Length: 205
Ligand SMILES: C[S@@+](CC[C@H](N)C(=O)[O-])C[C@H]1O[C@@H](n2cnc3c(N)ncnc32)[C@H](O)[C@@H]1O
Image: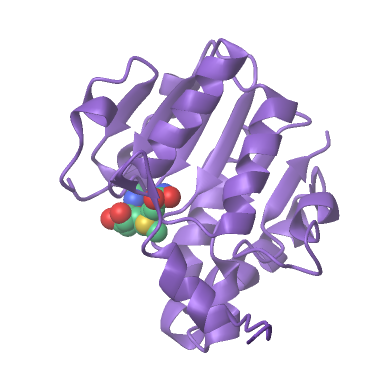
């Protein structure tokens, strides 16, 4: 019997591009898929801003999580209109924005008590840093700014992304001491055993 374990990042990257939620493409690695559920339950956000909708699988997943806690809305932003399932389009908790993070008006966040932000957009260093600066003030204290896909540093793609999220996070934190990297989530399954390398930023003040 073959009882060897083979676990490598390339295979996980492959697999995470094939993940679906209720049949809808959801680009999420299994570790992060689970961590999101725990974070949503802990924070109980009234608003989740997701930059990077793609086919909307994660938005649908998060809307189901919000159903379970009985409140909350998702603003999901993209630049491209991907084929979209009716369950995402007509979801009462999901509002879609198609002008990219650049044209999302922060006034849309007014009136929400607890706000969580997820950057799962282009992952380019310049965009990630710009997103961190644009959205940093709307994340509420004790909630999170989740910066996805710093793990591209481990698959040799850092240069293509100008240093990517890891570089942007490092730079951002030098001037924003109201955020810390929450190792509780980054290292939950082992040191940075997540695609969000150093990317679970907790707003502490
Ligand atoms: C990794 S996918 C998002 C995956 C999705 N969050 C999920 O979990 O299934 C990245 C998305 O970011 C979008 N994107 C690229 N540039 C963007 C921008 N300036 N603003 C918002 N979204 C952007 C792409 O079109 C793409 O759909």
